[in-house]
Amino acid sequence: MENQLGKNIRHLREVNGETLEELGSKVFLSKTTISGYEAGRRKPDFDKLVVIAKHFGKTVDELLHTDLTGIQASDINDKSVSDIIEIYRKIFPLFSSEETMRNSRFRSAYRLCEKVLEAFAKGENLRGHIVDDIWDCFLHAVDETEALEAVANLVWSIFLWWSQINDIQKMLALQNKLQSNRIDMKGVIQKYQETQRTAEVSEKKQAFRQDFKEMITEAIKALKSDTEWAELGDYYLALTFLFDMVDTELSSEFNITIGKQMLVAYAELGNTYALQFLATVFEL
Picture 1 (cartoon, one colour):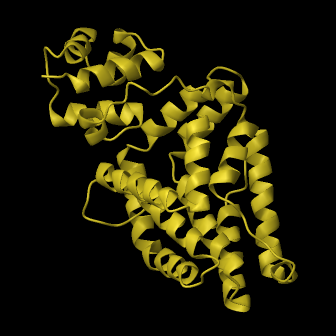
Picture 2 (cartoon, rainbow, N blue to C red; picture 1 turned 180 degrees about the vertical axis):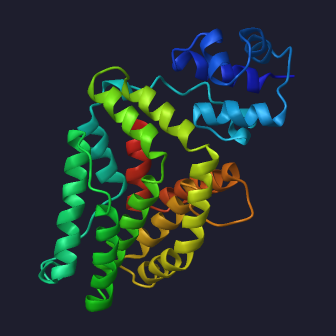
C-alpha cells in the first residue's frame, strides 16, 4: 500500500529545512517516531496527526490523502515585513470612491487603515483601540452612506480585528525578536500559529465568532445582492471558512478545507479575487 502520509511528512519536513529531531521537538515526538511515520512502519493516532498537520499548515485530510510532494520550498524568509504587508493588501483590498471619501466617517476610517498598514510595514506598535476605531467609523459610514465600498471595508476591518486576536505579550516578544533579527519571518509565522492554539486565544476567537456572526453575514449578503460586488461577497464568504471565522459545529480543519475548496471553485468560475488570492499564495 502506498505510504502517502509518510511521503508527505518527509517532503514537508525537507522543504521546511527540518531534521527528524527538529520536527520531532516541535510536535512533541521523538525523531525515531517521525522516522517510523515517514517509512510507513508506524501510524500516528488522530491527535498526533492534528499536531503534525497544524505544524505544516495543512489539514489532516490533506496530509493523509493528498499528494503534497510537489510543494516547493517557500521563499518567505526572503520577504521583508513590507513585502508581507503588500501581500496582505492583495488578499484584503480596500475600496474607496470620490463620493464615499466625502463622508467624514469613511474618510477617517480609510486613513486609519492606511496608517495601520504603514505601521505594520515599519514594525511599529499601534495604540490599543485603533482597530476598534476603524470598525466603528466604517459601521457609521455604512449607516450614513449605504455605500457598498463602506460595507466592503467594514468586512475588511472585521478580518483585521480577527487577525489581532492573540496573546499580546507573546506577540510583542515576537515583534522585538524580528526587529532585532533574532528570528526570521518563517519563525514568526510558526510561532504565531502556535499562539493560535492556546486556550486563551481559542476562547477569545469563539466569543468573536458569536459577537460578529450576524454582522458579517449581513455584510456579505449586501455585497452578494449587487452584481458589481457579488464576486467580493463570494470571496469573503470563502475566507470566513478559510480563516475559521465561522461558528459551525464542524472542526477547524474541516472549515479550512471547505474554505480552500470554495476558493478553488470560485477561481475556476473566474472570480478575480479568488484568482488573485491563489496567485499570491502560489508566489510564496
